[in-house]
Image 1 (cartoon, helix red, strand yellow):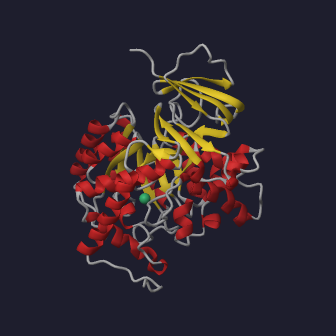
Image 2 (cartoon, rainbow, N blue to C red; image 1 turned 180 degrees about the horizontal axis):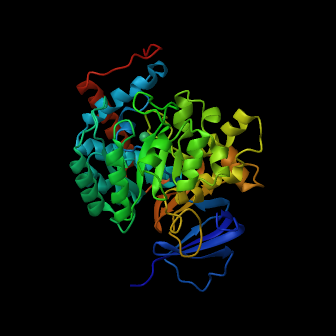
Image 3 (cartoon, protein in one colour; image 1 turned 90 degrees about the vertical axis):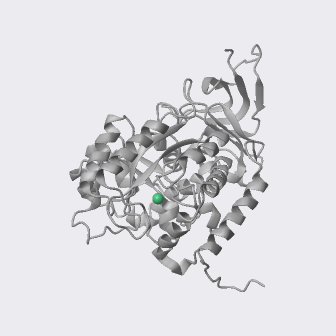
Length: 456
Ligand SMILES: [Zn+2]
């Protein structure tokens, strides 16, 4: 089979995120099939007979962003319905709405979330176990070309969220068969992990067994920990990460989401066990969680804990753009500490790319633009007011640009967004379908939230 070659030519800057953190001015990238075959400074590719040339003049190119925690399957259908004063009660409503979705509704809603994520430069996501009909939603993953970690959410304790309560054996069996069926599918773009929901609703014995199972199957596991910033002292008298270490649910293949309010003891535990953390600043700030004072980002980095970014769901944080989490991580710690040197732009961009890939154990394949790595590539159009003037592309990307300028996106060497247009879907038709799905879901659940201002 002859190689399918794409040449990205004449880029203003290629921010490689490679080991030396080289930024190549006037650069080119050659892609063969799903991988980067060459990149450099205006390499002479004139002898090549490539299948496609992308003129990247005035573009800044980065690796695809990595979002380590975002629920894609339900939120877009009812996004923005919860009033600010609902507080944490929104969660019961989320689960009630989600419970009433048909498989087809879940597929279309997932596809819209993926369309947003890819359109704004996120090429790898972790959907933390909340998709109920992965068998059908595989169509959305296949059509869109997204790179995705998925799983099946399990609990073994009664919960107020209508989550299925499994027996210990069923939880293990279900997780094992899910991983066996899906891990490595869609040419390796789908990764399947163990996904217990949270320490409040999953007992220590099951956590231990699921971690052992993920070790045996050579995959990862993830868990929601402390998204509210306070651990539930009715359930445990220990800080959650300390309890997780005692249960054996820590290690190099574990990524704990949220982890607000970590103590020094927990940071030490994360560091010594090599456990990763996915932080979702968009979620924390929307819920009044005090990100800058309650999430010890600098302390985690100082302790060499792997940290990646997430956004949580489109109807709690409401923002799915990894770019927004990157910006918030960069500015909120500065604000809280009064020290503008904290989390510099370079570190914020690392969190969104190579650090995020490391947190998910995928850095040998993605997270940087290097020969041999997967061609997951984002091209930002800088001929836009928010990018100007352009002298320091890292500062401009982190502090003044956002997903609006993402012009072309490639995953696994396949162009999925071209000149701002998703190539895998009729976006307008999909938007109208998901709007109707949301209206139907609220009707059938007799759910409405009065708006503060009259709609006339
Ligand atoms: Zn979550």
